[in-house]
Amino acid sequence: MNTKPQTLYRTVKLLLVIQAMSLLTACGSVLYKAEVAQGNFVSKEQVAALKPGMPRLQVADILGTPLLVSVFHADRWEYVFNLKRQGIETPSYKLTVYFKGDSLEKIDGSNMPTEQEFIETLSGNKK
Image (cartoon, rainbow, N blue to C red; front, side, top):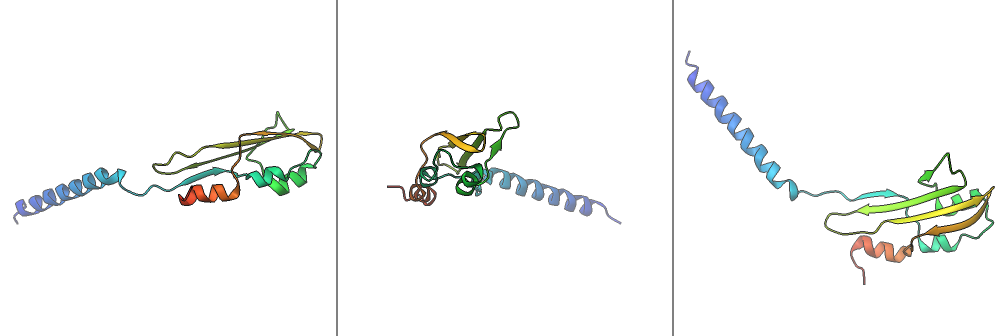
């Protein structure tokens, strides 16, 4: 039995696999990268609906579940949102609501976009 053709076949097969892997690795920057949305998007319209004195339950109905609720700061809810898109710089948004007891005391945060502005940012049709 001649083992040289089998050895040659295995060597060629290994070289083809290595070459295919190197081509795929070289094309790694061309492959599609998924968009990553993290957090809770809060629109300008939602923030406008908040009024001092609202109970926590009503604030949660308007804004949704907060991203961060600290055990050490039970009277503060954090709403943070960012979107990572390939090749596009997108801002991060942060909204903090403060409570005194069960009622909303104050709102602090960056300038939130309207729902329409946010949709335009996603679709790339920003005017």
